[in-house]
Length: 317
Figure 1 (tube, one colour):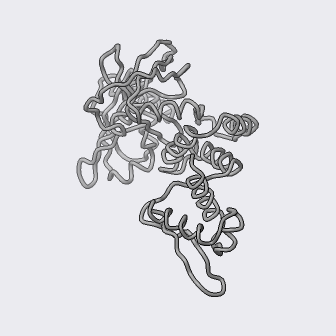
Figure 2: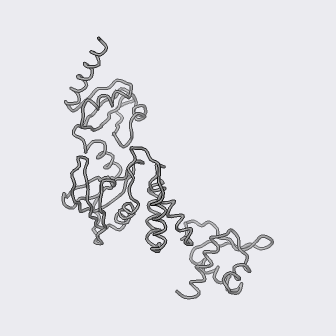
């Protein structure tokens, strides 16, 4: 790196660290003349950094906000602090923050020196986060590996344990990560099954990016595919139920990740949900507190009759 380039980067770091600097202060910190400072300021402007200059008492050079976010220079302590915060945010439940934090963390991790990466890992290992029993944490390294593989269209190999405990090895073309707030999923093309798959990240083991790349296929919408997969595909029974209530009312009683809801009219909607126990589904539907009718399958229709008969007997006694 040339002396001029190094000095310009140092100047950028100074401007990002404080609101206003005088020319004399910058010259002293950089060990150059104020004329050299002015030339370096012009170089930053040519690179797209909006550096404003003002005269008089309290005036000086100030890095302003531009039309686009310019690259930031971070010192080691700032880089570690940002990486720690991004790791926490990537596992959070605020809508949209997790995905953005993961992308930023992936970029930061790519250029972070190994000694700083070790500091971040040490802080993370020494930190315990209280979570509900339904939370399924995913290692940040797994998230970053898959995020980079999605971005770079890189083949991935991983072990996977499905909902019934069957362990398999998967060769994947990863396309997009999807979070429901509690869990992370990957939309990927399974090279051995020759079909699309939705995989839970917390069930993945030994995730490895292989270095080879693939030509992207025409992919289904990730959010729609994952929602359909987690609301019905893993289960033995998939029920379609008509609720005699508006969609907005019924939706308040279900997690968006657990069912799909289709409006049918002003006062009816169709809910699709899956489970392995038909009778448990009946009680699940009954908690909505409005009339409903099971359209399919027959096993769930019979379960409604069996539950109703059992409840009627309990009232008659």
